[in-house]
Image 1 (tube, one colour):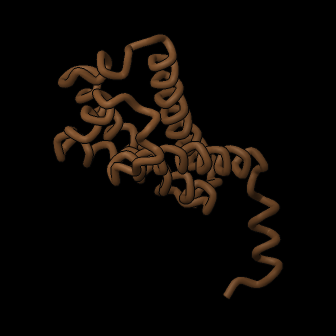
Image 2 (cartoon, rainbow, N blue to C red; image 1 turned 180 degrees about the horizontal axis):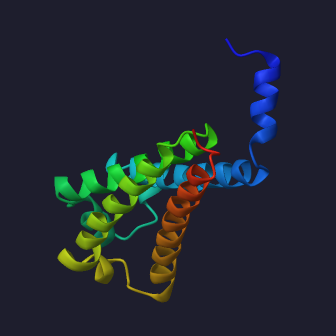
Length: 152
């Protein structure tokens, strides 16, 4: 069992930016997890904001696309938790999330009518860009923290 001095020492050596980024990352990725869960469970209240064509599109995802989406979302959530716990495996989890996002994006943007069905407007592209930038940023942030010895 950790002594009070060991806990205090660990907390004092953790940079403040790790707590800020870790908490924001967890909240951001939790939103992705809620979106995933509400969509795959076909939650009526949540899905009612989408058109019938959009709901049909989501409900027709092949198993491999749903699996890639799930892996992307949950590895990012667990990566955020690992970051807050200062665990070096946060890097691997964020890498898995990125690779899974690539597969998921391949389906959405290349193998399906996802862009057309969702409207393909500037907002969709900007939100997708934001998701990618955050995911890439978290991966490189975790790598840097591992290299500096913050993640164990």
